[in-house]
Image (cartoon, rainbow, N blue to C red; front, side, top):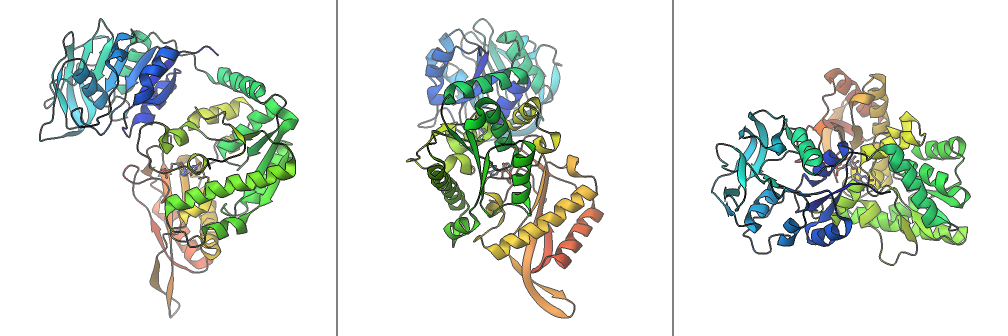
Length: 509
Ligand code: XMP
């Protein structure tokens, strides 16, 4: 499909995915590329615009990430954000300085017009997070906005369509941020915004058909939104040549394995094989306490179970996976530092014997959901709460053992039941219990106990990139806590995680 493109050069900032999200929300397709690859990629793909992200470096640092100056001569509009703004100034002959103070948080900004600020008030609030700032403009630029501490909060060379903003338009704390990005995309880059779901579904099915014509494809089905959408999409494209293998790694929630098997076999008539590999995964995880190691082991075991299955199934040419864009970016394909290696990417061994098909690889979660609805999946599945590939292993801190997993499964089932009974399902993005691997002293009846603590994590979020802890009413928490300690053997204490992301993450590992 011929489509308009915005390239986002990744300089390692933590909000980089958010920039891409914001662009896509305007129905403009964009891709995040490592800064080193920007120039080459821009020359080949001829994007409508380029955005430089923020990043932790200072332009004067040795080895600071940079792009070739040639990027500015391609005739493609550029918007630099935060570090991207400083880099633009630095490369084009302005002056960036490092003061001994920081500007952080919501800051009043004075705006002096320009196309980038079309329709935006002359005084507003923006979100700042920086130390270095642009003191002197590069030749040909003018200042579009300033704050008390930052003389060049926004700048432009309007003739060459090169812009820079020191603040972060992509975060909610900059109320006019979306309007600014829209101005950049539509007024400055001339985008039309024609990235829509029906287009995407049709082109993904066509692409899958072309790639896999006459080939046999093995799909890793987990029952989660991503792999379900992938499987149903592929079923439309590939039909009988698709074989879904559901590896029950024994790290699923209570009764989940049976429910998944029933749904795909009965409702979707998908060619599905269930492999019960719980023991194998537990053996591989024996004694392992490090979260990254757990993820890698689970990824590796997954692939090797698939390889074994494929031998039983005859010739298999492709492995189809539900990898989505945040997995790709968070695993370091962009520049942002690796927070957690998602098992479906980071764990892939180098000697893998299949080709890979990842049709959702460039889609964000809400795009995957919209795609799911577009191809006819029910709302209940499309809005199923996210569940990590490594399953309960990353909610079982320390060694993963069956006795600990049972506590998680049973307490999690109680939590889900109570959330549902109290009509809170739609209000909370994700909720689960975890085992922090702490035992503490308690008293039950007249007896001293030394039992496990169960943690509850419940968060509100739009895209899992940031979250807030959910304000579950006290009486509901009370009921959940009482039920867990009385119904789940080996537990005498329940705690509630009241941390947002950042600084925490949603999962504990
Ligand atoms: P974090 O813990 O990084 O999680 O804030 C963000 C979202 O991703 C889910 N998650 C995973 N999903 N494979 C997945 O498919 C994984 O390895 C994985 N780890 C975390 C997590 O449940 C949350 O929704």
